[in-house]
Amino acid sequence: MKKIDMLTPIGILIGISMVVFGVISSGGMSGFLAFIDVPSILIVLGGVFGTLCVSFPLKQLKNMGRVGKQAFQSKEINVEEIVGTFVHLSEKARREGLLSLEAELEQIDDSFVKKGILLAIDGVEPEMIRELLEAEIAAVEERHTRGRSMFEKAGDYAPAWGMIGTLVGLVLMLKSLNTPSSLGPNMAIALLTTFYGALLSNLFFQPIAAKLAVKTEHELFVKEVIIEGVIGLQAGQNSRFVQAKLKVFAPVEKRKLEEKREHVREA
Image 1 (cartoon, rainbow, N blue to C red):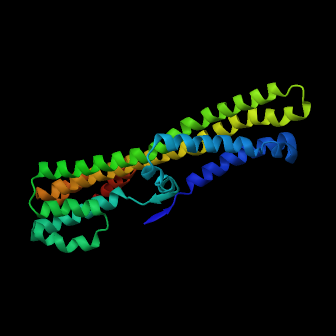
Image 2 (cartoon, one colour):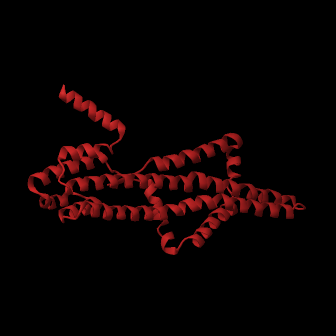
Image 3 (cartoon, rainbow, N blue to C red):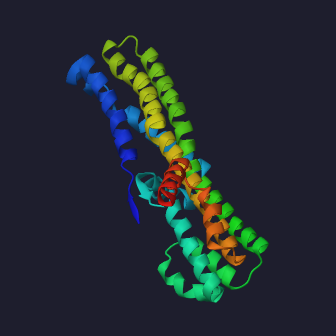
């Protein structure tokens, strides 16, 4: 079940709040209003969107919102629960045979786990199971990389369009030196586009790309754990051996806590 990843909106809110606080504490509300300039915003956002249209096909751009949404969601993937699932399945497989695991599939939500167990039930060789599942992992990684690249590129393009806006503002300012009333608005475009470009890149596009990369890394790690569990099932390994093998994938802190509990039980 997916939940809201509160750290993402909280981080963005903190960043924006610190900028607003710094502006208002120095120049008051009038100083804050001086940082609102629609032409500068349009230059940066329009430029970034235009370059993304040039860089990516329409089919991929349509998914940008869905991909970005993943940075604001948190899907609970508990390695300890996966280990417990495969320990239970290995015990049942040794008692009743691999075919008995078909009854357990209805209780498993993860399609990757289901696919692996079905391959094991069908008697596919361990090397072939690993090859098929790792091919699926590679496909997932490639798909996530393509989605994340849109935000990475947007993060690269935003500061560049900020500089383009600065050049536009400077040209307009130099052309209107004889008209003092137009110097202020032209200077705003010159400076604020750089500000907007840097802010969008470093507080939105690049952080979201980094969060997506972390989520992808964790998902692929969990799938590797699942592959080892499936191989253990297919090989008919003892449940204790399966547990010992998969426990090495658990976080160090939780492994140490489990070891302490085992020592207490033995005592």
